[in-house]
Every structure is written in C-alpha cells, then in structure tokens.
Length: 162
Image (cartoon, rainbow, N blue to C red; front, side, top):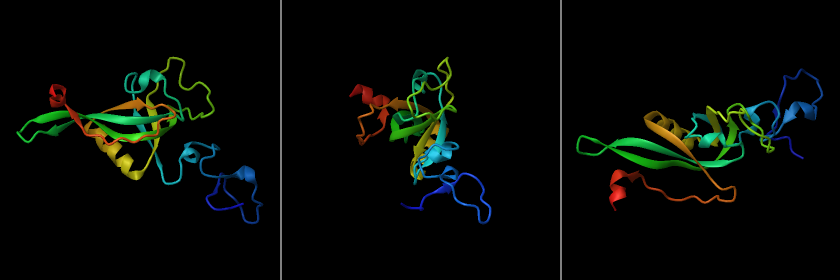
C-alpha cells in the first residue's frame, strides 16, 4: 500500500531485493524498543522501586500518570513541598527489559523492576527529566478505559488545612 514510514532491519546491498522480513513499520515489534516507539514520541526510562513502581505489577501497554514531590521557594527564604502531576495518560513501553504487549507475565518472579520505559513527547520528556532531578517520582496506574486529562494544580501542606 505505502512505502513511507518503513525502516530496514538490516543493511542492504546494491540490487538486493527488498523482502518484508527485512522491513518494519512504526509500532511493529521486530528488533527492539525503537519499533515500539510511536511516531512523534520518544522513549524515556525512569527509575522505580517497589513503591513508586506499584509493587512490580505494571505491564507494557498500561497507562500511567507521573506525579512528583518537589520543593519550591516559598518567597520568604524557605521552601514549600508540593505534590504535582507531571504528565498524564502515558503508555508504558517496557518494564525493566520486558517489552511483551501480548499479556504474558512481565518482570522477574520476585516482581522486582528497576526501570519503566514510557512513550512521551519531547516536552513531556523535559518535564520528567526536571521533576526527576529536583524531586521524587511516583507512577499512578490508570484504568484501561480512562483516557481523561485533568487540569491539576500543585498540592501543598497548606491544602490539608482547607
């Protein structure tokens, strides 16, 4: 149908016939993570532990929001700790080194996972990098049927008193 957006999986030599087994389209799982990254997105891995990674229960194909706990200047010479949503409704491409999207069990038998790889835009990647550098990140698992996007404002200790 179309030869646009097709990548070669191996080197080709002059006059070699093009075989479909040597080609991949975006989103096809052929030889690694790059083929899972949607056009216009980038893969970024974030470090997780048992708590921030939802007890090892995440799977490729799940969607998450990423929250951060960060400190900001309070304008009086001190700092105020805030919780905020950094990005929303982000697909998980890989859990650790596992990239299976066909429903097979993911991760080690102990449920240990050290990284989660997400598909994000450049701007989302920048926000995650900054939040990860300046604070601690937590993943919030979404229902598979919830694709809503909510406007959020940072939550501070003062908000508990209201």
